[in-house]
Length: 205
Image 1 (spheres, one colour):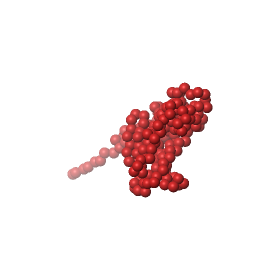
Image 2: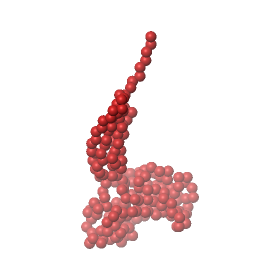
Image 3: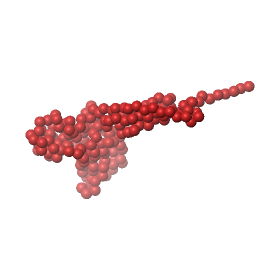
Image 4: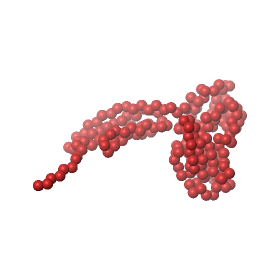
């Protein structure tokens, strides 16, 4: 007589995170707990693991996970410079009179007290594309928009995308910054004439 048997798992596990913006949690097919911390957000999340046996009995346990961020906030960045009065340290101030307010200087990792050659960091290319060198891992709302008529603007890229997206032609990064080349649409058509702008929403002051 021939018999066969299949392996069964007497316990089924489910796992949840109280805040997936801080850390995501999952159980692999091998039964391993996998935690994926945010690259942008810091904070504390509760991980809850529930085990269910073959008879439907359940038990659970939970623990706290703390995620630390190495992202330099605008407030932290401000402390690197000696501003002449609080008004010159404001996000909208331009103490070096180069046309870039402090918030934009923060995004581009430039010195707010020394005029910046802006064309090297945000420029329209002759082939209709755009290139910018920007701070990595931004928690602010930052986006690049494009238009052909200066009236109707379309979002081409936003910081939350990182290095993903069909409009990215190239993405080269260092520890702190990324140089990104963008095309105005994923098809690479209707390139010229083309205008570009940077849109930044700062933290509440």
